Image (cartoon, rainbow, N blue to C red; front, side, top):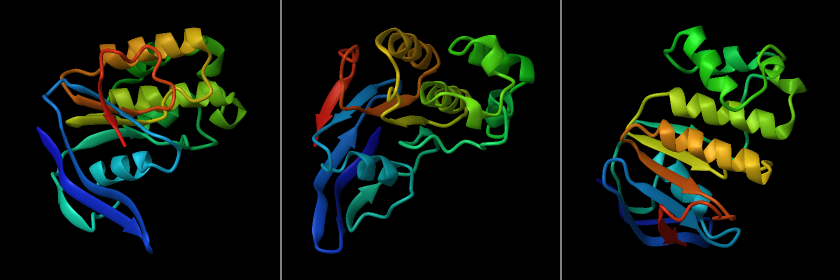
Length: 182
C-alpha cells in the first residue's frame, strides 16, 4: 500500500516535509521517528486527511487514530467515550477497557482519570474502530514501562491486518516496526 508519494508541506515559509514517500504492506508496522519539530505529527495529519499537502499525493484510506491530545468527552465515562466512536457492544467495550484499566476506572468521568488512564481509553477507542490504517501519535505518553508494554501488546493484538503507523520519541519495544526517520 502506498500511503504517501513525494509529499511536501510548509507552514508559512517553514518547510516541514519535503519529498516524503511512505508505503507499507497490509498488516505492516511503521514507526515514525525524528527530533521534535521534524514533522511527525504533520505526516500523521496528512495520512488522516486533516492537512493537505503542498505537493505530492496522499492516498485515501479509512483510519482510526490516537492524537497527541486525548480528545475525549470529559463528562463521559470510559465506556461511553469508546461507545461514542465505535460500533461494538457495551460488553465488548468493557472487556477491551478492562485489558488496560482497573474496573473502578470504567465508570468515572474521564475528567477524573489520570493522564495515563485517559491515554489508554484513547488507545482502546482507536483499536476498536474500523479502518484500513491505525495511526497513533505518541500513544505511550505518560505510561510507565509495564503499562507501556501491556498497551503495546493490546495494540498489536488488535491490529487486525491494518497498517499500524506510530510516532514515538521512545522506541523501546518497537523493534518489530519498520522505522521511518524524519
